[in-house]
Amino acid sequence: MADPFLIGAGMTGGYGGADILHDCTLAVEKGEIAVIVGPNGAGKSTAMKAVFGMLKLRQGHVLLDGEDITALSPQARVHKGMGFVPQTHNIFGSMTVAENLEMGAFIRRDDFRDTMAQVYDLFPILKDKRNQPAGELSGGQRQQVAVGRALMTQPKVLMLDEPTAGVSPIVMDELFDRIIEVARTGISILMVEQNARQALEIADKGYVLVQGANRFTDTGKALMADPEVRRTFLGG
Amino acid sequence: MMDFLNAIVALLNFVVIPGAAYGAQLALGALGVTLVYGILRFSNFAHGDTMAFGTAATILVTWLMTSLGISFGPLPTALLALPFGIAITALLVLGTDRVVYRFYRRVKAAPVVLVMVSMGVMFVMNGITRFVIGVDEINFADGARFVIGAREFRQMTGLDEGLAIRSTQVITLVVAVIAVALLFWFLNRTRTGKSMRAFSDNEDLALLSGINPERVVAVTWIIVAALATTAGVLYGLDKSFKAFTYFQLLLPIFASAVVGGLGNPLGAIAGGFVIAFSEVTVTYAWKKVATYVLPESLAPEGLLQLMGTDYKFAVSFAILVIVLLFKPTGIFKGKSI
Image (cartoon, rainbow over all chains, first blue to last red):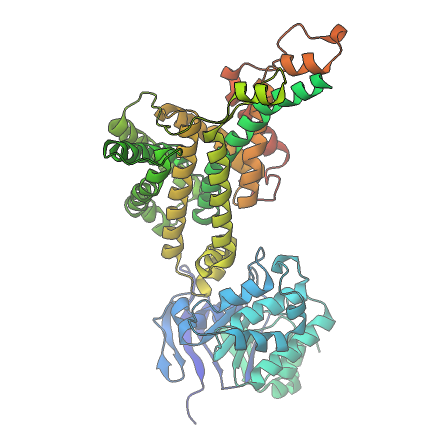
């Protein structure tokens, strides 16, 4: 089998002190959704940041479409076609929704109005609120702004760090629906999720991390069916 | 009725017009402070001396122009020299950033360290300015002195009170309006301006969006140099230039920026006028206005001056302390210090 579209293989490293990740491997295929779940402090977000180049790896490497990008800065990875939505502080609160999207497209010198229209199609509420400061929107709407901002570069991979943190269950379902829609357009999605059950339901691939290492890796469905995963991580 | 009109004219003449001109000068100064705070994330104590340097540079160019026989008709020659003064000041602050501030950005120094660094820069700029142009008071306003003179106004209206509008006051307001309009157009409508706001709002996300921080910083310094020089030249035209006075302006300017909300450009403008009018109303002797308005039996005996003009800095200081105690984010919700 060919290499996955994006793979962080055998990643070991941390924020300077002790290692947080131990030989951790994450991968996502084109147009698929990969979900990272696990208990608190398992290093889920850290693993994702490692894939995006936000911490130094002592070992392992990251490949995007076959190209080794291990040494690239996060900014350089954005240019390579990776989009990242941080868990918090992921919008420009004092700027309008439209300006947030514009800033998302900052690296593009071509006409990005089409992309903006696509984002508005995906999140119609943003079109209604486009002239409102993003900081005044509800939690779910802000997450939509955050995802929309990252989509403005027309990334090939979209990385989401807990996109549903702090939103209501109804909004969460809607966000997941949108994320599936994004994946259908051919964008690979790698996301960390606290709501493991719902996330695994939409996942093509699931990674269960424990203490910075892979514990279980399988399709989302298989993980949901695995009695041990259910018992330990999904609450029965 | 006449008395009432006289009172209004006296009020306009001694409080409203000078206050508005001074407020506009403070607002331009505070805009520079607030931009540095919003984007470089420190309080720039060298701002007063940047104003002094910019004004000195403009004065030198003005002298050069007058010696070459260039003048601006009824307007002060300094306005023609202003763009050159701005360019020289921009070079100085960009050089300072390259030599001093950039190092501290690289090592991610705490804001308080940068404040101390800016004090060092302040002393150096202070010295450069004095070395170049001296410590004396310099009047460099030429062109027409008055738009309306007090005597003309009395003859025109038949009122006892005269209303004098100096051309520098009108110039101050007009130039300030143009500068502020340009600034807001730049910040809200251009790609670079928006990237500056984005950088100020959320630095990490701005980096993730591919915004180049060094470019944002450089553009900020150029704008700050333009605002500081403009504010300094307007103040100097309206009053006079003296290096030490500009250093002292630091306090009302910071008070303006803090009152309005640090990091918020609209707040800086509002703050400038709040401080200016507080200073002018507290130090103005209200006797004249009161005599016109009140019935004779209530005519005041004293000057009705709350505070001598020598103490005018106490006003900004008091307002600064009150705001920091009760509403540290200022009127327009800036960042708290």
